[in-house]
Amino acid sequence: MTSERPQVVAHRGASDREPEHTLAAYLQAIELGADALECDVRLTADGHLVCVHDRTVNRTSNGTGIVSTLELAQLEGLDWGSWKKLSRAQGDLSTEAPDVVSMSDRSHLLTARKLFSVVADLNRPVQIAVETKHPTRYGGLVERKLLQLLKEFGWDQHTPERPSPVRMMSFSALAVRRMRALAPTLSLVYLVERRMPVAMLDQQVPAGVAIGPDVELLAQNPRLGERIRARGRDLHVWTVDTPEQVRVCLDAGASVIISNRPAETRKTLNEMLVPA
Image (cartoon, rainbow, N blue to C red; front, side):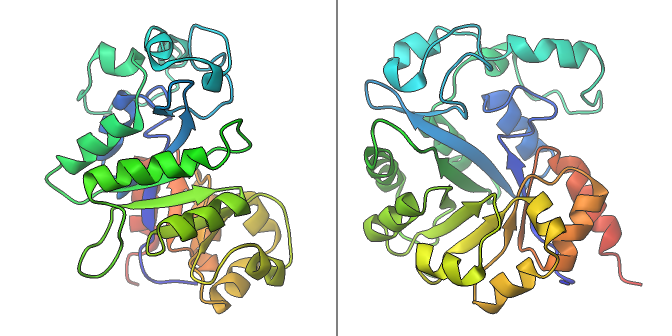
């Protein structure tokens, strides 16, 4: 168990309150005090990194098709927020959220470049956890494009003298190893959703790479966090949305908690970590 407060990462932005991966979701997360933002990136047919989780646009836009086969202009012509209106009308989202976004922020496609620009202009430090999605027809080009963008912002190096606010994550061990070769000092996270021996994790990814298990996997294997940390690896847990799940993370010694509900998760942590 840890007595230190884990970092709270807004999963796809404040995605319980706003349409996931829209600028609205990230502005909301920033306003609500999230320590970091999580985004999934995919490559368009004309080589742009866009913040979209699914392989297709069907679930989170008013269009259809595969992201990797569409050009940026086509994707920007879609509405990325209307699907969330039903949830808001039903009262599933908090009415106490600060009104910091416009309707266009809730409907426009968000590129990785735009999200990076927003974070770069903030008056407080906020980190970004970038998940590269695989498998993809573009293979390692996704990581190479990410590195190119990081270089544009001067974020491709992570040292005490020159810290980068960005860390790369993936469920693909190959992608993680590829990024280690491309940017040796960048912080990396290997995401896992199924049980595997901790020794196998050592075979999959290099030393120093953090491990990111599903919170349910962690709950079912209470000593998993201890075993991971014993190998000198940080523990990043997803997706954590209830007080019970926060307790699992604290008991496991997690250094990072990824949540759809960053404000509520921060509040729960503050209550749980109040000195006796």
